[in-house]
Image 1 (cartoon, rainbow, N blue to C red):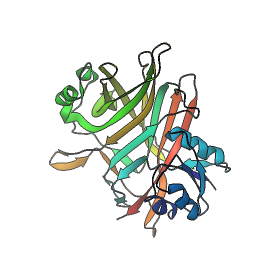
Image 2: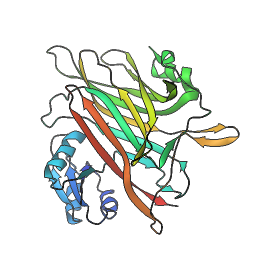
Image 3: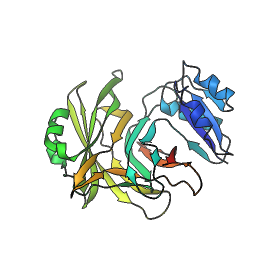
Image 4: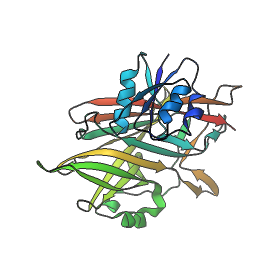
Amino acid sequence: MPDVVLPVLNEREAIPWVLERMPPGFTPIVADNGSTDGSGDLARKLGAQVVHEPTPGFGAACFAGLTAATAEIVCFMACDASFAPRALPRDRPAPVTVKIEGNVSTTDGTQPPPLRRLEVALNRHGRLFSQGLPVCRAAELQSTSTQQALARCRGAFVGHGSFHTSLQFGASPLIPSDGSILAFNSRKGGGPAILLHLYGTAPVHATFVLSLAITHRDDGDFGTVLSMRIPRIAGVGSITGIELEVGRRYSFRGKTRSYLSASCAAPPGFPGTIFPFLRGSFVFAGGRTFSTPLVDNCQVR
């Protein structure tokens, strides 16, 4: 049976709810990343294996949990990726909003390698519907601030968030840089896509427009795949964190539509289920690759 790594930072209130829903045979490993609310002690009292990782960062906590795991199959269950609402119909899709958060860090605290390619595969019981939404084109977003981008493509708006990077110029110290993200409905190669507009103001004003291609697979747990290539950031730059919330309701042909929707595929007779919500695959400079599923849960309504 799999080991399930749960990176934790001050999640005392959520831990009992998560652990009591762990399927029989799955072994929870709580990787405490410096909690000050007693998360680790509570998890241990509730029967979870607990490891402590003092180096800040989601990646460091995941690595500590992975190192402690002994099973042939290891899952990662994060409080950082989720969808709402959790109560969904069993037999038809209902509107949802998806929230994704992730951090990239090294175990020794040095600058992580640049991310070159990102792929996010969503569970096939979710779907993306964009018919009737206006389309935003990359040319409309070039050299624009967050406010200007929203003014030009407001009709195609489907999400928002923030990003964090670490920049280094020559031998200078690392410079942290943060900014905002807007997500817009778009098209690429004749198929659906999402445009991500990234805008930062420090150390200089800069705009990046990235295209997430959307494809579909006919088999396996994951039916919708979002993928993109990450351009080189000026100097030596690394993406160290991203938060993104995607979801929108809109009217089309007299009906209310949802950009994202999902059903809860619990077996007959079961009130809910734990399932692989998404799988993230990351390719870094030098060819290093990391892929992990994120597990979540839903209840039938």
